[in-house]
Image (cartoon, rainbow, N blue to C red; front, side):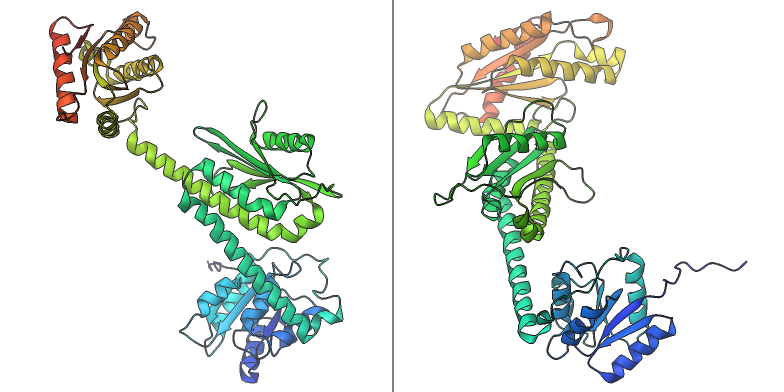
Length: 488
């Protein structure tokens, strides 16, 4: 049985060949026509623009180095024009070294290859581009409607605008990227982004809403031409996009420019654009209230800004996720032993520097091993998680709670002497003892034992402090458990 080809040949297409060498053009022409493809020809980028003024091809195949307008400049002009932005461009070169690949990428070429003597590789690359290209719009007309657009000076002006646009895009990307290097925090990134972009949007309004593990981060900026009702409507549009129930707490910053006049938006356009990276969930939206004409002029800049912000927020989310994994105990969600010890080291330095009291308490579950032995480790894990929640809810905001391992927990009590820590430990023990733990088999209650020690200032160490707390915990166990023992 004959085997089918893995890749079917594409339908016949129309290719614009741009080549200043007559010999190379003849080879290209013969290769493309041998497969039934129609050919249009131009000797340089300027002639290619003249051809495009009358007819639109399916593909542009251009040499890189030509007089008047080379392949890189031609590609840049095509990719910066809405009418030809999606037209596939294949750039060719005879040089195997140099910055050709770099320039081809920066000008937006879809493919860049080194020419071979037979040109078969050029044809294969062109047919592959046609297979993956989006369908051609049959209503698409010529690129240039005015003959004045085809003059040398007009083309030079277009090239200058294209280069200026590229510089602007690069500067925008760099400015947004610096937001992360200056302060890698979702709140600061969103605030800096809004401050940076408002000069391009105003008069009008823009806002960003981002969902993080800690909650929603929102920020907006507006000009004097935008009323409070307009801002509320834009906020409601963002609420619908985010799926937020209830009113969104959106801080708004007024325009910083004191010279801005009170203008009315004559043709206002409200947009809510998703901010994301391909392959990741949409956790942020950009809301805009702008003049329609202004948006059409700056649509590419806004798209770039949105993409760059999406990358930063995704990077920050990954950083936060890794950070939490590094400092959290996976079972209880509390700080792990390493991070708790680091916090204690920091608090002890603060206590010595400012002559403030500091106390710690080591807490251990009583008779926890029989629970694991009789009911299994899954039941024991549920008990540990529930006790961790009870302890966390019973602490003050300044206290820090960590799991040191097994069924042992450490509580840091800044600005607290040993008597204050002892009373707090008593309340924690009473809360856990009197609370019915629903995940404990057979409805049993748990009890805790705790040892309390305080920082002694100069000459004391974290290791000695923990050792004293551990000695008091051991004493509490020896005296019958379910009690607190503090150092004298």
